[in-house]
Image 1 (tube, rainbow, N blue to C red):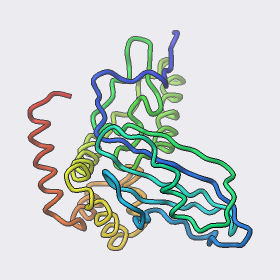
Image 2 (tube, one colour; image 1 turned 90 degrees about the vertical axis):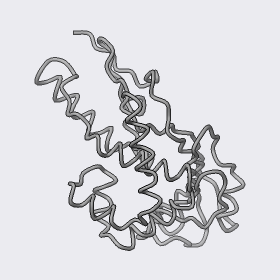
Image 3 (cartoon, helix red, strand yellow; image 1 turned 45 degrees about the vertical axis):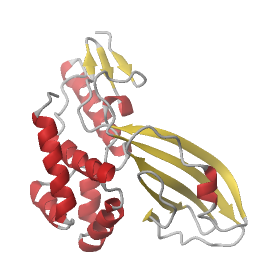
Length: 240
């Protein structure tokens, strides 16, 4: 059987719920300014534009790190300007590498299969809408495709994604669209009140309902109840 794996063509009928835009530099300092054992995941101490911005820092050693300015934006966007990232860093660094992109974030399932064509990667909706991360999800999906090919001779016998994660992502993006300041408060509450292992499992969509209820209970209730109500009305009036 001839199968085409498509990582380029967008799925029709799946508008993005928001955009994840980022600008990153790999930098090197002459002096050891980084703690190689301590990455920074969410630093909101940057000017906030439309949506919500934060920086993460991934040190390779004391002198070198990837520093990335990330913006969740509820609509069309370009990468954050380099000047915004330069304002975060102290002087005296050398830029070794740059990267930037805009990633659409989908909370509705993508139409993956069309005849003998199967969408994969970001075009298959495998970028998690509430984080913009997709590497491990794409790895798991690729393993499931390979297992289906070996077992059944085609790539279509894959596990069905759990819909509750898309609903939770949709609620978070709804809050971001209406009250972007809540993103910083949500991550602060979650990482202060919850074990890191539970948070990382949730970001990888590897938690059970009990863990998810504990995480939801740690959030300020009113913004998320309002968002959940809007999403419920929206989904009741539309068909996936």
